[in-house]
Length: 453
Image (cartoon, rainbow, N blue to C red; front, side, top):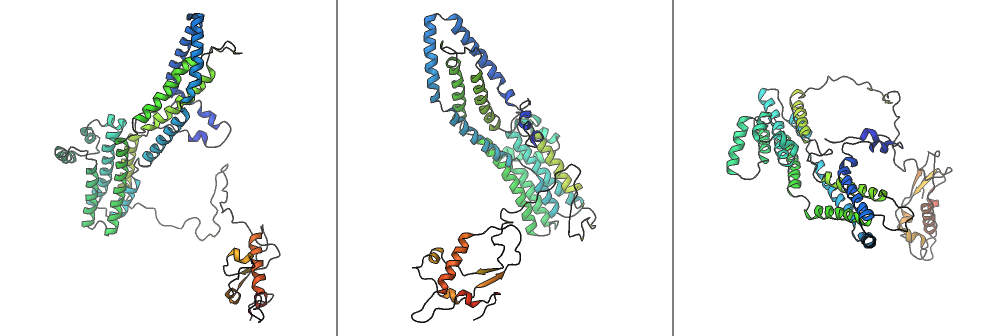
């Protein structure tokens, strides 16, 4: 029941988002139209009573009451409550979606690690996949009304070929002794089959069977997360508070938004701005309401039944029909070609080369042919003549790198050049007592950059 509109917003044309406004399924119009219609009818009833039924003295009282309510409704922090509530609900929705349960990894690891084309090997592979799908079905029956309507009892699960009769008997035996949910049982069966495959040498090593079991455990953790989020929803006080605040606000607006001031330039019978505010605030609340339980039956809820069917079909195909079914090994069309240029259909978009933000930045001037490399020195010591430098730096070899690429785009680094300039100046002017200073850095290298004593 998910409403997909990605194709309509595949580009950023001016009218892309406006196309969404004419959609009905899952739209804001479908969510708020009934409440807005009721509110609008009530607004016109109050307006008619004020204009035609109340005497002048009572109209004066109504006017004072409307102005008072309009002034005090700002005390209700609508933006804060709705914004915080929607943020929490969207975060929960994201976690539920990330743990919805795609069985591809379990199926691929089952096909990769359990070898053999014998009947026993095929049955083990297929049953591991089916048990994982069965566990997902049992979990979804407890948290999704879609799946509950499809499989109202375990007998219907057997009829749907997700569980076999003897497996249900085993399942019911545990049920007679355990009052808690048994979502764990199909996963235990799948792990036992993986260990059986190892004992029968269908799995080559313990590492391989551990990898397969870890994938099954990851899938089980996802199902446990879904159960936990359904088991412990948001505290009921929070959605109660938001719903109460929003509906109280617009109930008071039936009085406060009436056109009661005789000094108004325009006397409108239809509340244009209040209608926009109603659509925005109620629509905002409806967004949170739709996302609060994405396993339900709303237009934008997850397709739980489709996911079960998809996992079963794709999983069995991977471990059975697709098992060790690889194409023949032949040379590809780019074999021994250094310049690989894939083809594009006419009208498709050319590839834009992706590079680092500083990949084409050159820090050397055009006339620089060598780069001198110095040992690391504190920048404050380099620029402060009162701080003595490490004299051993002058005795160490200073590398000179010949720069060959003098073309292209370049930017100079003023700070680094000034630092190295001060470093060279100070190191060339060192004195030790009355003895002459050590040779300057320039004296250690000839004009071509060769080092000499």
